[in-house]
Image (cartoon, rainbow, N blue to C red; front, side):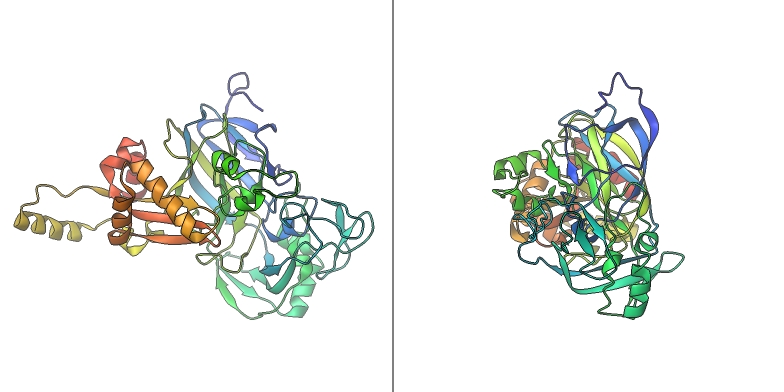
Length: 438
């Protein structure tokens, strides 16, 4: 990998390469990009395409990590999301099932052909439909996942809305799946459009693109979709070669797979650095999603992404912190208006309160095997980050915030108005001021 000293850093890096769905800190990184520099990438769809491509070992297809100049273990990397643009013309998705016999413990990580017993078999596409992906060795249809109820959706030219299609239209698109999905040239996945699902035609949907995967490289090899506390729990004691312990998961993951819909253009996310150079990567762009991603999947698309990177020295947390757009904040966590502050000052004068503490929004990510444990993780992280008790975080998140669900089974946000002095003390105040005009 680049060592950050012998290789000159660059102001911008254009990324067009992908991993084999495993994030490996020993693998060569791209770059380095200078502190303050820009990363531009053309990303491949996540979820369904890689899920039906069993040679990919992580359930997604993310970009090769980029080395950031000056990023050392124990630092953070602030990522300003400058732009996210959907390039896919159409995609398909739906609620899934995992047929018996088509995996070694985990269909996301270790797909297998039950006829020739090949794990991670190379496959090809013959025709369309849910039996179209065939094993290169024996010709058997290899389906680690099936769509129980699904849809094909196409987008308008302005990428503002989408419309789900009837069977005939879905099949027309399926016959030219790579074109309609706009798969990047170096992507290895089969397009999910090949399956041509059409169970809810004529449904209009809004587009609100965001990144399902955005973060830094974990400090041990880990399937990309499992770089979080919920999906990562499936690796604990697993029967395949990526098995880890619970202690290793907690130590090495960086929670880059969040599926939080506020991780979109204009947001700022601060991620932990657990390997030298950080290894910034991205993927799993979604055209839109409601909180929770309750179907398990949403509209995975290809697209272009522009990020600006800044090193934050001595970052005190092992997970991400998000500064969402103001419109994405829960109502109780939005900055107070001038009129509200004026009313507060009158109350303070009436009751002898010497000072009203300046507050700023902050959103701390929590992940774990289920939502209750993820909330505990988020509360503990917020308390550790801001030097508070968990009881104080609970109170502040109740009166000036909310718990939001990123993804079931276990990604949440603890979002609340925190004392700005506490955010300044950990070196993140500038991001709150920039984001919210404080």
